Length: 447
Image (cartoon, rainbow, N blue to C red; front, side, top):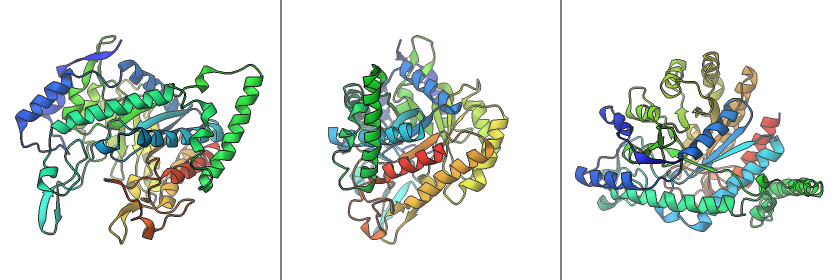
């Protein structure tokens, strides 16, 4: 019933140009690591991937909403119970807000247990006259600006596997062992309600949920679905050596599955139609996402559908639009119109983060919460005008009280960025901003 046998069909990408791959100095060491990874057990199972595809099929049909979020880039030194629980807690709270306030089933997918790699705009970085390879995530090299840290090390691929395994084990324990019980809606907020306007707003909603659950229980209804939560793992399938080493043939169906995560996506920098990433994704049966930025033409989107979803299976393909607040209303409509007219049933999701990054005077990369919100508003406006379904949001967030994005209900200013700027790559919404966003999205969806 599981995908557990490695298959050479996962390597057809090797004859094609592969963007954003590390330049390992020791090819033999890389081959040894790949051979080890090919022998490792799957991190997820094919049946779970099929289950997520079914849930995303409901999103594509307009029957559900996708909440996808987590770190921009995970780190090996942040695989602790507290940090994982805080991320999960934030997503559970956002899911409760969207489910109750928007009255829509929410498919919950984390950017978690595999998001250790990042594409970069430059292959090198120069500081004080010293040039070194750029940091590409903990799966490739170290963040410290030293020659030893920045050399790509294939052993880090095995570290990524083990860190992802530990994270998934803990997530499964939290989501099935009682922590995610809907009757815990207050407990998720105890450390937050007194200090935050969004926490107080959430607490009021939690009381309403409590009353509804008590009413149902008094009527003799206490569904088992309230005690656990479906939670899926996703990441960008960037490092193809790792992804193909963890691709297996499912003994049930004979199909290939990338068992590094339930869902993987192709980034804006790696979605070339004749490139290795699209070829790899076309071979696996997981749900697949593709980031679409401002340069995307309708013919690009239609060609991606032909390559990645030739059978037009709802839930197979998710288009994640990342245009920026100033462009989404102008550029998204034609894409949605042409894709809809083609008969394809893709899930449309808004990434309001990546198109709204700028550098503050302090040198910190940041995002304005108002820009994030405006892009989501534009996304909803486009779909409302076209009569199509705004299928979800894809956000970079953390459960910690960081100061990386400016604005929000707690009003973080540019001068506050240095206080808790902890991200290794891109700025994330903190817990308060994430809850603010969930309430505002719920209002848009209901409207």
